[in-house]
Length: 66
Image 1 (cartoon, rainbow, N blue to C red):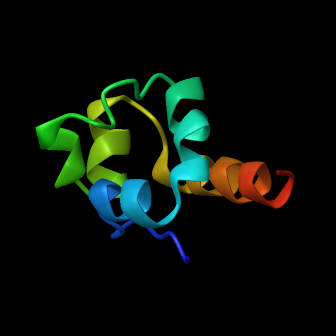
Image 2 (cartoon, one colour):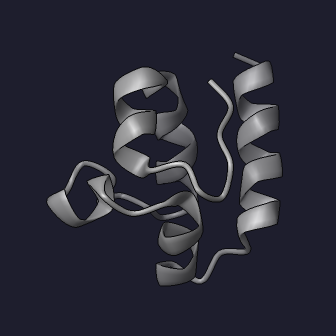
């Protein structure tokens, strides 16, 4: 699954659950909540004060090293 700034968190949870620890590692512990499931990666990063480009790079590296 390609994950971009516009990817909805709920889609990631459903299609790529192995990515969830990476979200939790940067403080996004509410990824399973109703609000987060409809947010995009960019919106979630903004809500948590995280640069979306840096997070996407981190997530890509995390998934490649599983």
